[in-house]
Image (cartoon, rainbow, N blue to C red; front, top):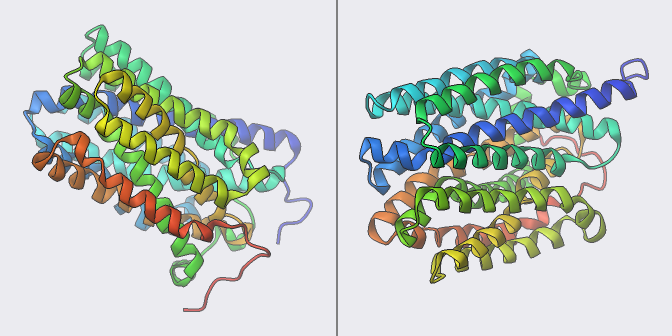
Length: 400
């Protein structure tokens, strides 16, 4: 059990809060930096929609591999050392993609697999640290940490837009981002606090597997998967869809992507007040409807300005699903780490299946029309949203 002597001081919590924001922000910068250069990499490699979907699958494959190991990795190393190690791996991965795409598909796939691996373990570790800080502060701030991620994606998207407009080479752009993001993250996460009581940080492999038998945890995972699909589809395909379906220039497509990410950022920053007032379930169901309306405008809108409005509503509606799911997984601080690992593992299946699904549908319809698949998963999220209600009391893990 945690004693008074074990509890972090106010100064330590403030430092850990800032460090957690930084970890989320730099993760977002790295992801958006890659996403803004997808059209250029696609063109250099001569990939069609289904082929691009398979290449993007490498990120999800790396993430899933990482998530299988992340529970034990975070338990053994702690969130601070895990994020530090993954920042180094991510820097190498982005550099391989940036330098290797001139050589062919193989280096890109290898780099993206490493990128996904780093991102998966980094994600679980920073969410565990976010839960520890949230519990230490005694108030819900998880959506704002995820807003930090969105701030990072907006910054990365705007930098990418500028890089495209100024004709900065993809290689230079990605390598600079890799070095800056990796070094900055390793420096700032030194302020992370220990991951909490021994029951959380010392979970064994056997006890972690027990959490896969919990009905609520699995349903929260499905909920997160649905919103991750809605978010990931926007990140991977908005820029491509605007170019292919609206014949817009590359700079306009990345600006549409930035609008989507800006809407997600605003939703995550202002969302906690709505959650406190109306509750998790009512808020996320309303946002799912907003996201669906925006998606339909984006897909069927007759012009690029209408697509901008659609991206705005789509991003707003998709904003809170993932962080609220992480908060729901962390309701019982004693078992936050293993439940976050389970929920994140399920959620990342969206990144495994999403890119090839949209790509294959895009071959037969168009990329924009293929995004109708997102509407289906948003309906699933609405149906299972009851699982994210706060736990009335700490819950013990189910017996195997």
